[in-house]
Image (tube, rainbow, N blue to C red; front, side):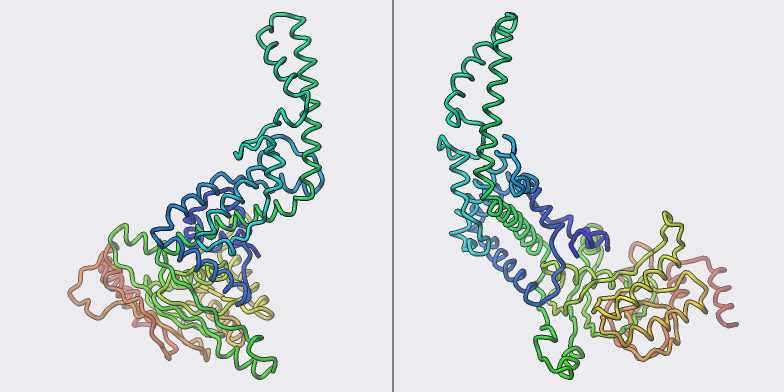
Length: 485
């Protein structure tokens, strides 16, 4: 699974990815092709590299050298096709030869700049000095390329004569001679391209490695810049159960001890929106264990945002990035499954419920063999309440025994499921004289999570309607119906 496969998972995740300041086409490809890391070793290795780069870019004295590296990366083309042609022993043209020379030039320049920063080992760029020399026969030391005169003894004279004949375009004899010379020039140029291509075939693997690592450097700088600018933190990764023991009982015990914990977890997209409108934002503390956790709370209490933010943080961790929190301890999973929002698929002719139930079925099947982070927002809310509640109970019965981290928000009471329950605190109690509006309502919300052992859910819909000055007759009739139930 690659990052491109998860880019549409959640708008908040795409918001973060779009904010990465990548400066090369190759870097953008490296981002989209970055793998979902599933072992502590690979995640920690990536986070170690990121930590080193963050340390370098945070030192004022290094900024000039860092800018030099970024300038070189800015000139890097996405030369994957050119390198692939060399790998297939194809003849490449003059433009592609320029791309090859540019790769060699950029690799050398970045490597020189990285050495005093202590980054040369992380970047680990191959030596392509022989490639550059082959494409720089006049020792210009510059990245530009054309078929130099020195590549063939006849080229200087032919080019000189062609230039002279350009001024005699009205002379039919000159025009004929020009056409003949131009054909000779093209034949020689093609022969030079063929010869150079053959000499470069053996360097295809090194060139591919250089492009890959230069793109990775661009990606590392982008990740580091975002982590610093948005105050992200490095997540600590819990050891895998396979590392802890080979004994099945010990592995099971390790599984039971696995957890994911965030302190000060925040949603960057929502935070930035609130800051723009000068609204309050409250980060969240949460611990998540394997099994099922039901989350309840009033409308507008932030349940959906909580699920989305947990998913975003997990994705960022396993794509080798820092996370939006004061501190984080994360257990790795095989995949993150979102089932949030309107699942209606008009193109397939499916209703919201049909699309949602297909997704839930997929969750049940995948969780039988994989450890997942499962995030389901108010399942079965679009069907009739009796059947909807039964579906939620059945889903809960299954997920409670699975090794996945399952979080479900719901408004259904009396589910009878023996699982952990969290409730978002909701409205503060000091609201007697408060004047609420859609613009200021978040000032009166407490988004913190509290343990809730009851099997009922908050009934605050009418309270919210009253505080928002909803039509009095509507509220009174609703209260009367509530009493008659």
